[in-house]
Amino acid sequence: MQPNPTLDQLQVFVAVADTGSFSAAGRRLNRAQSVISYTIANLEAQLGLKLFEREGTREPQLTEAGRAMLEDARRMIAVLQRIRSRVDGYRQGLEAEVTMSVEMTLPSQVLVRALKAFEAQFPAVTLRLYTGSLGLIVDQVAEGLSDIGIGGVPGEAQVKLLEIGFNTIVPAAAPGHPLALLPGPVPLEDVREFTQLVVTDQSERTQGRDFGVFAYHTWRLTDVYTKHALMRAGLGWGGLPRWLIAEDLASGRLVELDLEPYRAVRSPLYAMHRTDRSPKPAASWLIDQFKRQLGCFNEFEPGHVPDEEPEVAANP
Image (tube, rainbow, N blue to C red; front, top):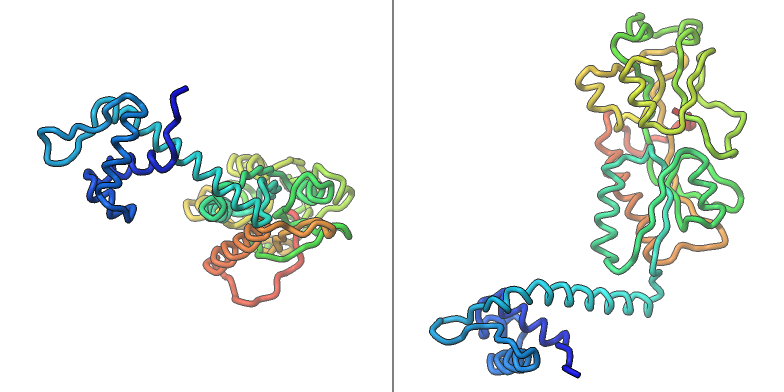
């Protein structure tokens, strides 16, 4: 049976192709030029293919077969390096996979930045991400479906919470909505007369309880993005995270309402995990990363006062 190329041979092959010469590849890999030449010659003999043209050229040039094999070699190196990284992680107690549940009100910029940093820090760890609203996040953590959760609804005895930041929830409506046309602050009796769009909890965690609901007539929705779309269409008013509607407020597609009973409020965001399961290294690192990213994000939010105590959370 024909022997397979080794990782070392493939790394030398890629180094020569990238640097354009045996001597430069030797400097990159801290090896003598003769060792590089010998390794390539052995690889070519083993494959029965000529990978570089050496005659009539100042520097070795990839042959057609060499160019075709180069991408395969890069993929093989990446796979083998990932295997090595995963093995090293197991030896250090690193988990193979992190499962996380995230509330949809978490700023998308924060989620993307945190996960980019996670990928760079733990390339061998698989991520499983669930998104939901309100009590669903706590339920998934409490039931062991997720290692960690990021959300705004307080948990229960078996879920440990760590406050990591906040959302600012602001009441808003389309510019043509009657509440937007009334001089503020609009009193409670007027606010009650217009349909309020409310995100309802699909879990039973907050069943029977309403936060920040003032209207006699409500439409109940299951996610903030549908609520956002309906508000822009003028189908009701409601509270949404400032980060989500910042562009709409700036462009005038939505306006912040001046309501006597409903002011902009800071709603805490928590990282959570089961009290009987301490987060493993990658999950623990990810919680710290979310706290760091939210701290940077909140610092530049309009009206933010450093070290200010957050107000009681209100459901949007």
